Image (spheres, one colour):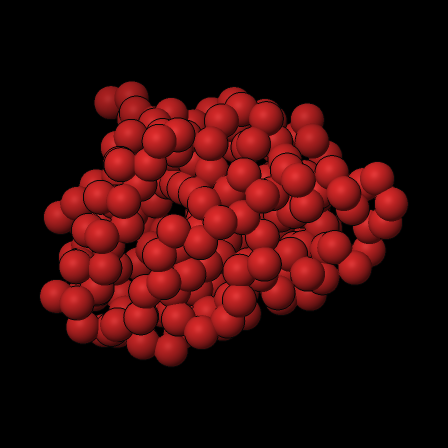
Length: 208
């Protein structure tokens, strides 16, 4: 599994790229996210997480309940290096919280929050290499079209070119048009299910 991650995700992306990691609701995402991907990212650089509604924390705690002994201690130490922007209610029991942000579905307010995150990331002593979000699909689900408009306004106004963005999205909470909107502006789309990992979209050039 780790080799697949290195080939499909880490081996293809460059700074400024977005990777959309879509997963089925019944897929054991806690094991993939915290047991495979996040350790691989931390081996390569610094990681900042934006955690909407504590979704990442819930997955993290589900993962920790299944590890014991030295593996548990290593996980706690390793993930303590993560810097976290907590967006909305919920906890962030991993890493260090940089800022707590109230989620908004107003494009102007969301843009200000987005600018705050980018500015704080740029000023961190250890510059981030990867920006990971958990719960982005939930944010879009709760805010519907206003959330989509807010997200597109932010990323088209203040692009994140200095790091790789990796965004977990539970496809069960989004309808088809919402998923299509974010897939359309994302260069890499990877789908995870109990049947395996599938690269659905890979950014690149088109031969004419």
